Image (tube, rainbow, N blue to C red):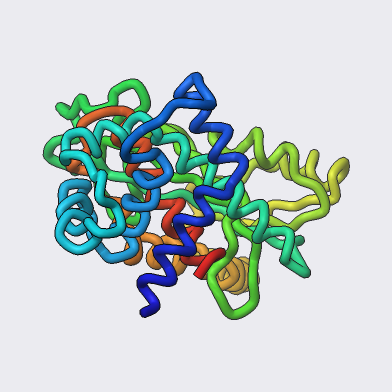
Length: 294
């Protein structure tokens, strides 16, 4: 059965990854730390549960207990499983980085990129001012596409353009919801070479673009922004903006696919910083597995 093959493939990848193994050894502070239910099993259970469309940690644990207990006989209680995920949360980030690095090496052409951000919502409009979960990394921000204030994070993503399909993520990172997209992306953009980057209007910075063009053979292409007080846009500018928006459409499709496959945007059940990191990176790892492994 296909699900069995996928489960085995996922588990073997996690167990054989040197990067994941090194990370888990570091957090355990020992090469000989023995656990009845291993960290590799915990990562496998979590990602496989998300792949089966379970969105809550409790539901993933219940699914595993009811249907996969023969595969994971040492599965701990729900509380212990949840704590384990919080402990190894950044192991999913390591997994994302390794999967994407391997997949990017297979690309024939990678000189055009798309960049944008996605809100990760811990609390919506009515609770955005009073929420306090994971306040070390969260704050209140505004999502213009949804027309709403929210409390949580932003997922920032830069991806390689791939013909007739969703882009391949190159760089993924999280910031607090209130972080300006250009401010968050500037360090990455300043390192780019020999590349066209298609972006939204919020990434407009003429000084940065002049630097990239003159010194790095790189350009950020955005829709045209109206001047202050301008009501109508020039027809040529309007056509150009429409063309840029069409080129950018695949990253919107990627975010829609990511939400559908993993439920990453809804984090209202999270109750801690590490829980939120496990939520975000675990779901990104799931998406990367769907792109790179299956």
